[in-house]
Image 1 (cartoon, rainbow, N blue to C red):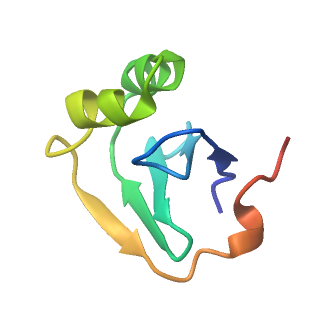
Image 2 (image 1 turned 180 degrees about the horizontal axis):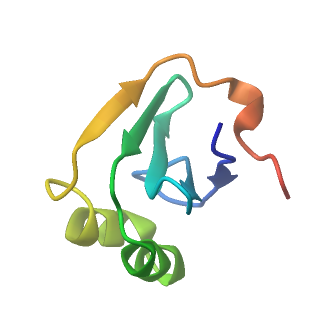
Length: 82
């Protein structure tokens, strides 16, 4: 499971990254987590350091990487690691 960190964004609720599998997890609503595959670490770093993760997501991720919807991501994962 990828630990998600909450963000203050109109588009995203939280996100996290698994450096081993290069998977970016993005939560748009409490029960809908998307796993974007093969996201390079440098792309994640640029996304993570951006002023607006919503704008960065649209520019760096959307339409560029395959994804799968993870419907049953435990809600307690949101906010872990703070």
